Image (cartoon, rainbow, N blue to C red):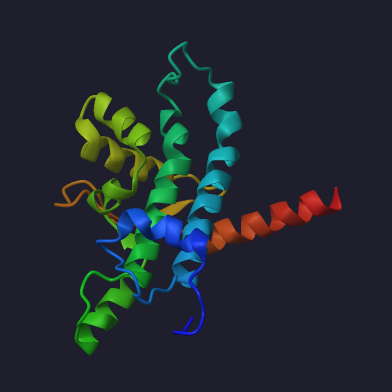
Length: 195
């Protein structure tokens, strides 16, 4: 803005509870790249959830919403993909270290989008965490098992298992197949426009 322009009242109302973090007169900006990555995470997670929704329903659900066990991992496919893509967005647009050497930055960018189950736990919804915790084995083991099962799906391929989870200290290393999912989204949009 500048000293000769008045602040927007709506922005002041939004920031008033955060005055300790954003003091009056401070300059702030929004990361549109992070916003786009967050939106992409939400849309692709929803696409995955809708892609496998019919398979989950065809196998039957019990009264409490749990599946019969065969395709129970498909219930959580959308939220897991969303969490993994949110983690990747944070990795790219909001690195934890503000000052890093060129080598550290190169390593961080090379591993962009690669995650272990423990990395995405903070990005899971509370409902998803609770569902995984209540199953036998606990949150970390069930998340790792679900990621392994999702890596075996072929249409569309959701994620790849880069390092085998069995015996891995972090439960394996995985990567979301973002290109395949974006291609599927593009075809779906084209199909909806044409029909």
